[in-house]
Image (tube, rainbow, N blue to C red; front, side, top):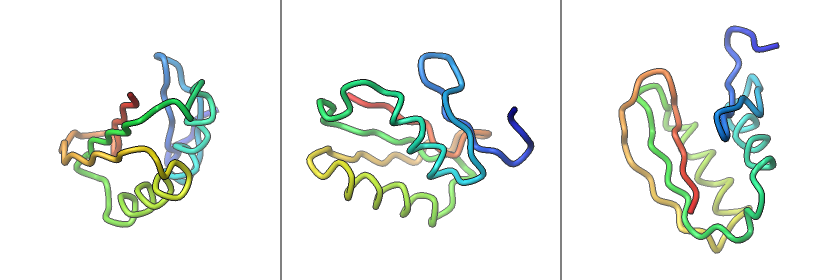
Length: 88
């Protein structure tokens, strides 16, 4: 069950991951997405509560794990969600 302080990953309208660490929740969510190796662009909209460490950790993960993928970072400023992500 999801507890206060957990980060969740939503894909296809369903909660597919949760973790106390936002990066771990993202990684678990990405593992549920088929054909990640065929994606070429990762866009992330940073929410108002996304810290510089969260941003740096996410970018470093993508650069290491998916070096051929372009990473587009946008300051979205949305409430509630530190990251909203799109893959193309």
